[in-house]
Image 1 (cartoon, rainbow, N blue to C red):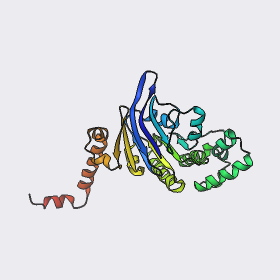
Image 2: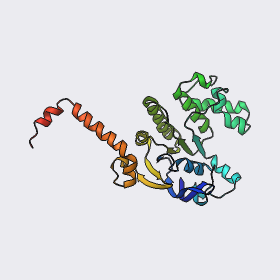
Image 3: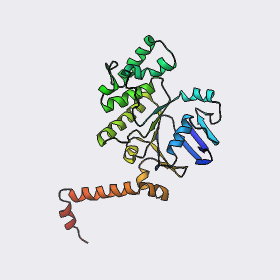
Image 4: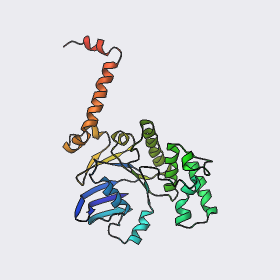
Length: 267
């Protein structure tokens, strides 16, 4: 489990997070939503230890690591994997070299021991037999899976997705959502999804937090984004709610017999 209590953080004299409280339960997909500049990216940096908070607690597996040394935090960072907006693969390396990058280049394990791990990971991701291909030879969906394989090969307990659907068409968004669900089921990880894509959040998340002005609001289950009467939630989801309502009216008017049925109603 990952838990934040009263986290304050920022850059120089500018505080961005003003006492954030947030809980990401084990083996649950927790979404963090919010507008640009709300503090989502800063919060992600705090969780990964790239930015240290000025106050508060960052609890990973029951241990507060907010103010430990960088050497000590590195040990906890190994429990986490970060999946970027883009696949961020090394174009000059093969799929096998990309997936095995950390154990081979960082941990200096012999390639003979790394390659079986790579092949096992590719099998688990339904990508057998592509280890000699280069990223340019793969489809967008395959590149996303390879990027996940590079993260999952060291078996993190927590997966963090940084705006994974940004810039994608609806078909690819659906594919990415499917991958996120599959990763949770297959690898039993705790997932944290940082996103502004409300439809994707509704599709894959099990719990939602809204970040506004550096403060986290516990929304609860995703469907509450459509029903919450909280003014902050309503303001953030207004255009989305309007879109959903317009779609419902459009579908109702297009349904065969809808007009006849409405005309037959008594006042």
